[in-house]
Image (cartoon, rainbow, N blue to C red; front, side):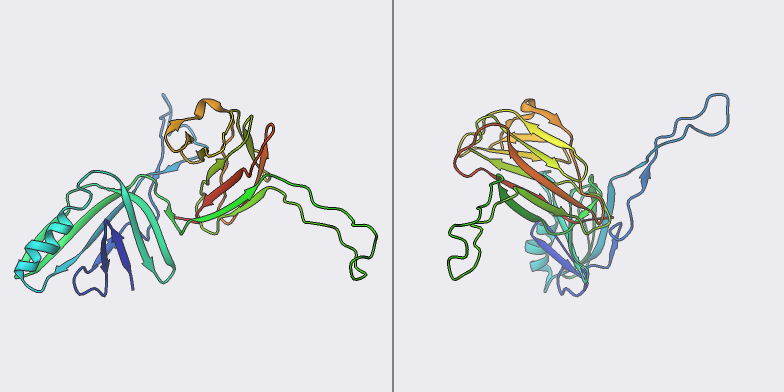
Length: 281
């Protein structure tokens, strides 16, 4: 079975009301978008170190099947025609035997309803995903700042004749994995209290995100590695305090171990939450 959802509507190749007949552009890779600079007075063009992907273009067609004409004109057709009426991008999710994958889309053409007979109509849904990667379910991991562990407890051999090394420490790390076929970029949220800020380092690449400003208790700083956006409490721009912005990603089938450190003193229970998804072409 193939099922798609968008804007509260669910379509399926087994549905009795919202059927899917074709889904073009979902299972194909997005086209490349090469920048070609012609050689003057010579054959060909200059070489390129890397060509990037174009947006993903999607077209879904099928049938809207009502019990009668009245249900069609009062429910099914108006609901479909109102998709993304506010113009705000929304998730488009496809579920098949491989699981659920999503991308953020906008309409690239009007939702087309073509009445056939009684309560039956065909439809065409044209979408564009500016980020062409399809994402699996989000995975969120959290950690506090590094803490040291205990040591040998004396007298040795107690209690019960065993050596006891005290409480375990915390490395202050999260391990982000990407089991897909496309590079993906994590998002981070750090909460205070941190008197002089914090830094995050990908141990595999050595890249660092260093934020130098107090993070008070009850305040959060979010960082989006794909867009480079830094927000304080989800509203205020905090990018001016990011003095080192070496954004890092997780390669296809790769791992990114992120170390969380305080720049100065801290109190309470500062936390790092990191979110990443498997990415697929």
